[in-house]
Every structure is written in C-alpha cells, then in structure tokens.
Length: 330
Ligand SMILES: NC(=O)c1ccc[n+]([C@@H]2O[C@H](COP(=O)([O-])OP(=O)(O)OC[C@H]3O[C@@H](n4cnc5c(N)ncnc54)[C@H](O)[C@@H]3O)[C@@H](O)[C@H]2O)c1
Ligand SMILES: O=P(O)(O)OC[C@H](O)CO
Image (cartoon, rainbow, N blue to C red):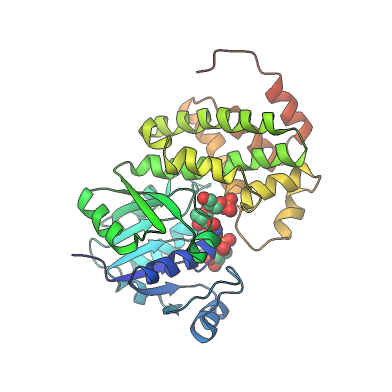
C-alpha cells in the first residue's frame, strides 16, 4: 500500500520544504505547526514568512491539531532534536498501531544522549521507523533545485513506499537499510560544520578547512561505527555528502554559527540574533559525552563542545588541536 496522505510535524524551514516537495510529488499533505501564526500564514497566504520566506506553500493544509497528522498514511517528523520527544509523544496519543514515521531531523537528544530512532521507539513503540538525511538545504528543496538524499528504512518494502511517496527527479532518495548510519552522519556533521565555520571566520585558510573536513570525517566514521553504523553508509550522502555541503557554505546555520564565533561574536550573541535552530550547539556536548562513554577519539567534536560551553576560548581550542601528538593517519 502506498502513502497517499503525508503528515509533516514541524513547520520550520525543513518541515515546510519537505511538505512542499511531497505535495509536488502528488501527495495530500497536512503540515503541523506549533505556532498559530504559522498555521494561519500557510492556510491564508500560502506562505511561511517566519521560517521559509520567499517559498510558495501551495496546496498544503496547516494544522495545530496533532490528531489530524495521526490520521495520515505516513508521517515525517521534523521537530528539532531537543524537542522531538515532545512532538512524538503528542503524536503517540492518537497514532494507530504500526504508524510509519520518517525522522528528518539531525541531532542527538542532549539530556539522554539518545538518537532520534531511540526517542521514537520509546515514544511510539509500534512505529515503523525510517530516516531521511543527506545534503539538502531547505531553500534549495523549496526552489526545486536538484537534491539527493539517503532514505534509510527498516525494510526494502517500507523504503519503496517512501521513495514512491516523496521521490521526484529533483529530489532523489537513495535507499539504505542502515538507520543508525543515516542518523549519525547528519548529527555529527553539524558539530563539525561549527568547527569549519570557526576556521573560515578566523581566516585560517582553505588548507586547514580541508584538513578539518577530512579529519572530521574520520571522527564521524569512528562514532558512527561505534554506534552500530556501517562505515560504507557514512561515505554516502548522509555522511560525507552532508559534511561537505554543511562545511562549505554559510547558508548552513551551523557553519555560519562557527563563522560568527571566528569573527569574534559570543555564543549568546549569535543565538540571540537568530530564530532558526543551530542543531550542532546542543548536539556537541552529547557527542562529546558519547565519545567518552564509548571510548571513541573525537578531538574536534570535543573541542567544539568546550568552545560552545565557553569553557575554553577559540585560541585555546585551536592550539590544543594543533599540539596533539603526530600519529598514523588511520
Ligand atoms: N533547514 C534545513 O536546511 C535543514 C535541512 C535538513 C535537515 N534539517 C533539520 O531539520 C530539523 C528542523 O530544522 P528546521 O530548519 O526546519 O528548523 P527552523 O530553524 O527553520 O525552525 C525552528 C523549528 O523549531 C521549532 N521549535 C522551536 N522551539 C520549539 C519548542 N520549544 N518545541 C518544539 N518545537 C520548537 C519551531 O516551531 C520550528 O519548527 C533540524 O534537526 C535540522 O537539523 C534542516
Ligand atoms: O543549516 P544547517 O547547518 O542546519 O544544515 C542544513 C542541512 O542539514 C544541510 O544538509
């Protein structure tokens, strides 16, 4: 059975862009927003000026009633990671047994160090879980620019249903059976993008930038594998692909956050100046704690966590990384 109606939870930039894409793919789409002004703007003006200005949100109905989302054939969950559990618990109050839920957010829950797949299993134990991840800026997807993503599902049949429902020539999903790999890549790359932003903001040069991407990818792979991911998955769109995108453009909120730090702004100044979520800020300490717990070497991510917590300065962090002992590359 294919998915005809898609419910999207979270009308931030990414939830809105995914709703636009699903509508273009021919689905009936209901978009859940927690803010009434966002619901009204979508229903009355076909716009979401708060989170995705300039995009036309046509043919999509917005709601603040989660019970309407639970009635859809399948659900895309796009709430930022730190608030995902609350959204899923609300969905769980009216969700039918075995509801198909695709996790589209990129982060770990800081309070528990859990991945979104664990948060979903705990909130709705019968849910059939999929993960969407990969290099994809919301604005690009809303504009209909070509994008390719990893679509990880727990069975090929479930993956087929999702690919039929949301795949389009300009939004190409590639199937994977590695849910953990898809999740881990997206969460860790956000933290590494903060580091790359710092390098750019401080003008440390393109050689340092490339070194950071490469050594960062080694960290991302080590943690992913320790969590149960397949290393091959991490070489794909959801790992290396997304790391390259997010570390390459200040269109990324994580990269631009790091860039602003490098330019001399403080963490609180930067966060106060934006409504958009910067997932790497909350995920950095979770990854640093996981690295310690699992005995995984992640010096770049640990340094970002220290900088974001304002326990060390940028200069101290950079110096500590550069003074690490020389060692074999792998
Ligand atoms: N924007 C992108 O280009 C993009 C692309 C891929 C993945 N993602 C991921 O999608 C997820 C959502 O990001 P986004 O860009 O849509 O967000 P956004 O920054 O555009 O909007 C913030 C969202 O957070 C919600 N929010 C704020 N406070 C909340 C609270 N207390 N409880 C519940 N929800 C709250 C808002 O309602 C809004 O939906 C993130 O994990 C992000 O990493 C984003
Ligand atoms: O803007 P960012 O840093 O949240 O990144 C957006 C997407 O995850 C890029 O794939």
